[in-house]
Structure formats: structure tokens, C-alpha cells
Image (cartoon, rainbow, N blue to C red; front, side, top):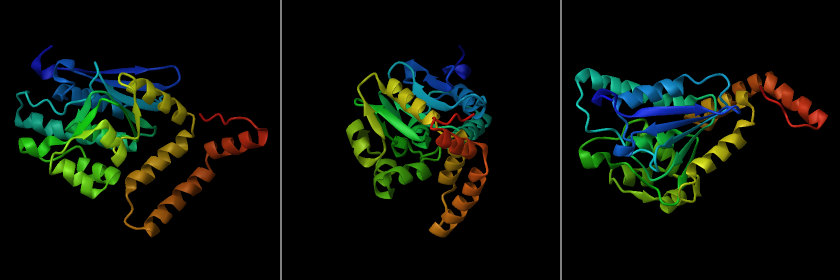
Length: 256
């Protein structure tokens, strides 16, 4: 494999519609190369219609150590690097299905950017988290200056983004960066269980809910208006009709 195509993205979908996307460049702790960014962009923006949930993880016991800074790049490569990252994070935030991160080892730099863009983070008890951009003369990217403060608050986000402070798994759980912990080696299994549980909910409502959450309204008045418009669509939609029929027939709803 050439330097221009180092690493790969592995994608596997079950018959139940659970898509697992694996970042794989284990010799560099799954640092994201240009090639991997392009493949990840394709995987996350081109979800098949039968996908009900996505889990993003890393190969061989590590989520992602950040961007691959060892690559030789041209100006055109750098433009592509940012374009791909923008598309990846935007697609995760607005994906029509739940996207869950399964973190073993650590999520650092752009790896953290990808994790905090997900709807839910499951981390092993031995994992760690960091945004060491200022240590290498860079600023945070991948939307992390928007997603991280919304997850853990502006003060703690400043500590990680400006101070480059790291967080252990326990600390990350305590500050709300991580949603749940799993024993070492079981983050993917736990994340897959969460994804399966979430996937039975209304796809139509999940899509609309994620759009509302990403909209970031400036006031409660704007939020109420956005919710009203979305709710009117939902009430007239097929999933709400199926839910009402299932309730009347005393059975679980069968969303399609």
C-alpha cells in the first residue's frame, strides 16, 4: 500500500441494519490519513437505505490518535483534507440514523472531533481523551470548537482545547464527555447493544430529532417554532400512524 493510500476504512453491515465502520491503521494507532478520510467520507455519506444505526470504532484496541501528520502533502491535499473532514462531521451530525462511537485505547485530536460528533460515546475503562492541537501549533478542527463545549460546557472545553489537558475514561464520564463505560475490550460490544436498542425507534423521528439538535436555535422561541414544524410533519407521517395502530392493537410498532 502506497503512502498516499495508507490505512483503510472497514465497513460491515448486519442483516439487522447495524453498520460498523472501523478506522484501520493500527501501526499508527489509526491516525487518519488522507486516504482514510476519503473512504470514511464515502462510508458515512453513502448510507444504504437499510442501515438503522452506525457504530464507529478503531482497529486493534485503539480508536484514533488524530490526523496522520507523517504524510507528505501538497496544497491540493490540504484542501481535500479539510473538505473531507467537514463532510464527515456534517454527515455524522445529520445522519438519519443514530451514530455511536466505541472507543478503546484513546480518542485524540481529530479522533476526538469525530467521537464528540456522534450521538453517543461508549468508552472502555482504560481509554483516554485529548485535544492536543495547541501542543503542535494548531487549532481544533472537525467542528470540535462547537461540539465539545456543547457536550461538556465552555470551561472544561477550554481546558481541553486551549490547555491541551487530557481526560481519563472516568474523568470523561464525570464531565459528560463519555456517555457510558465498558470493561476493557468490550466497548464495541456495548456500543453495538446500544445501537440495536436505539435502532428500533422511528427512523423518521430520529432523522427529524437529529436535525433539531444540530440546528442550535438562538432562543427558546426559535426552538419552539422548529419543534412545532417538525412535530406537525411527524404527526402526519407513516411512523406516527404505525405507532398509533400498534398501541391500539397492543403490539410493538413495526417501523419501516
